[in-house]
Length: 594
Image (tube, rainbow, N blue to C red):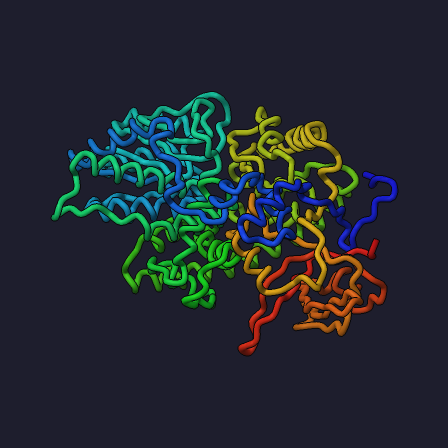
């Protein structure tokens, strides 16, 4: 693939392009809200065209939540759950083994416990049972006396399992946010999924845990209207559950727009005083500093807490994440945290080995030249970590990637994939569905089960779909920036204004700014991996800059020696060191000025 004539790539080989063009009305909106006009591009990129829309975005409240009654089948679910409560029927929560599923199942377990109802939580073994409801699990729950099953973060494509549930005398309520494999719906009393083709609910972004909260919110209101609550049966407080919603939504890399933004903002708002014992223990184990002024950040959730909660499921102990987050027993919480910590370390070692082998495979097969859509497979890989490896590869090479662990005994592989910006991975996987036993997912991520002898034809179809469904420029790494700034305007007041756009994450990215024509001064290395320097505009203004994890690498090495002016891209924050605070520029990329 060639670049456009005259197009200059950065030191990391990326094209730079502005996120959004700005209109004069965005500057007007910024002034009306007391924001610097320099931040008008942030309003433009979020389609905040009016003062009212921007005001609502910058001040998210739970009062802005859409009515759960708008979700199709919510009314049917409420009637069936109320019947189960009145008749004291045994209820089971069937969850997924990832963070979204663990937080969702823990949320409903805690909610029902607050109602005075004990529920059975079932999380399938990732290695033996695979993803979602399955026939043996349905039979087991039936033998235990279960009458009603509520799925969280799964179930929308579990046709055979739902039919078995009905055959053995159980009824199922499905709550799931994944896209439908086809137009069919599974056999269930109610199917709550905003991504149903026939659901007019406008907020399709909800994660599984957000959908579970919506169910609890709707049930709380319904039971109140039914006169369920009294002095001996108090109404549960839903606000403590928002911690779980924030963790599950962020860790699932759901888009932080619409209802997700409201829920995550509310969950993070009070996270400096976490009430969930499992989250408290995880924060301590991860060594995260919590102060009355600062709660959890999306980055801490995504890179510190999420992997630990996920670790049990990845290595065949999926129930542990849900149990940790639903337990109030200090001893049990402490035990689970230690198990998850060890599992996470094992996961890291396994991941490093598989990634090394995958990188060697990419080089040997010359995939960068041969294909745009990659399918990598081996019988020596662990199915619990293939998704992480796929994510690492897609991020590094900018290629949609499926990584498959083959079970030689069964003659089939379990694969997980990640995409790049603008490329619909689910559509590419669906193009090869004739070769798959099961598959599911969404634009950015997908999973599948495939007969081992179908890998080659599937890989060909997958690559062909990626090539024909997408513009070639999507496979050139891109750094998207918001606007140009000068070191002279970087002050703590501007940083505080930028922070009003939090929480940052998928769909609401942290703003990236470009400082043009600056020179690097006093560069130094920190811990052999990071670069610290000053960026001087030559007009009397400079800003301290940090580049994390840039060594070894072309960007870090160039910063240590470059004398010519550079354009640098990065984010702005306030650094705290020895009772001193100052603005810092966290450097992400650079190119020769001009």
